[in-house]
Length: 164
Image (cartoon, rainbow, N blue to C red; front, top):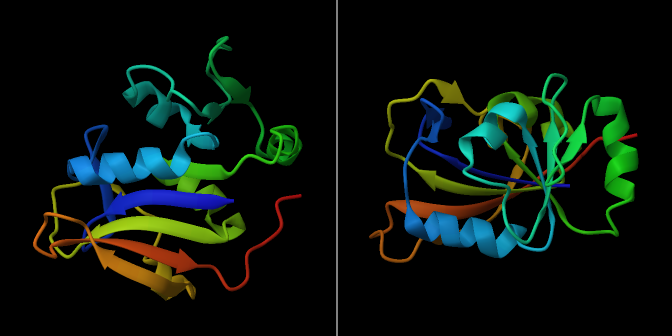
């Protein structure tokens, strides 16, 4: 299972149901990586979307959301492994929000982060900086046309737990 997020220098991820910052290159990067896969999100994240993400299986973790024909609804975390096994080995991407990151971070093997040192107003924060949790920085490249202010970073979890 993979994770994808955009964070600022304080590991903020959002403010008022929006991402901490808007960067078109990040949206393109997100689409390129997640297209054809399964995106796992919480109800609040799903509600910020105008519609389910095209070209992906939209799996929403929620105890209170009503079923819809255009998403896969998972009411209990314990049901998630079986649901993911039925997804034809598609890549799985955890896309938020904060509570879903907190729940699934230990089970992720790889995290693709768009990062900037700048700090933006936020009311939602990533669970913890990945290096503080023992994740290893595997690669870092500047986001095109941002004068090095933003980077695409890939972190690897040296000891992911098994989602049973």
